[in-house]
Amino acid sequence: MKKPLVLLLIIIFGISIYLLTKQKDVISKFPDNHKFKLATIDGEIDTNSFKDKAVVIFFGYMNCPDICPTALTDIQSAFKNLSKDEIKNTQVIFVSVDPSRDSLQDLSDYVKYFHPSFIGATSDEKTIKELTGRYYAYYSYEKQENSAIGYTVSHTTRMYVLNKNGKLVKTISSNKVDISLISNSIKNVLD
Image (tube, rainbow, N blue to C red; front, side, top):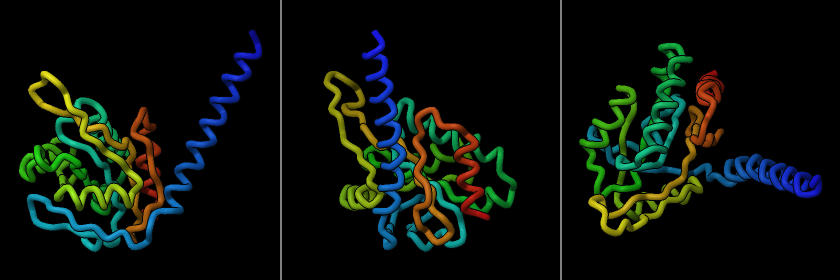
């Protein structure tokens, strides 16, 4: 009876070590030259649009039933731990990986529900694929037979925190995240 328990603990420990090193691995592989151009309701944004700000990027889609609204709510909650100046110097960008359904106007309305400073952005399929590839993020369309929505999107559940120079410094899993981890990551960037 003890051997299966010990084996289970070893497996859990191994997975934990893998996940911790995976984040460092992603950050070390993240290219310094990670320029992007995305469309928003207010025009195009690019890497240089947010110089001297902390940036939090989350890839998702508006029809997401759980992960996306939860992640945006968590970031909104983390803002409660920030000063007005820290909020002013932080930009959250929700990047839709479902540009065929998520219009720029709808994206803008959607993210403003969570916080008035959040930006909803997207681009064409090719640009989104290139951008998610640079972040080691993924998404795929999953066909839903006999469904009014036709398909859902499986996607990465990580937040990407960039420093004031646009370099990735932290990835945060949005699965049951500690809100203070988000706010502290933003504070560390702004210090």
